[in-house]
Length: 79
Image (tube, rainbow, N blue to C red):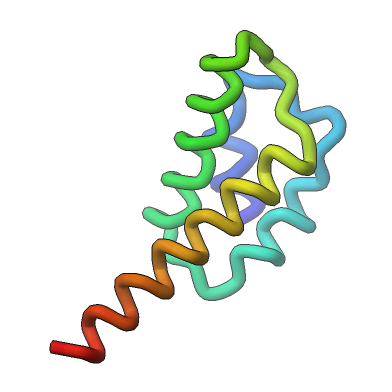
């Protein structure tokens, strides 16, 4: 996943971000989940007018995607 993050986050600066650490937090995520995290993080940066992705930005998007996955899992179990 770290390589995928590196490729997807190429348009923004990630100098203050440890991509291996971020990838470790996404253990169990699919590649599509990881891509969504990257897309949402870059979208948030664009809305704020920044080009520097911080550790906190990535952590927030990972947390939000994990919450989405929990909702989907609960819904699938209920069916």
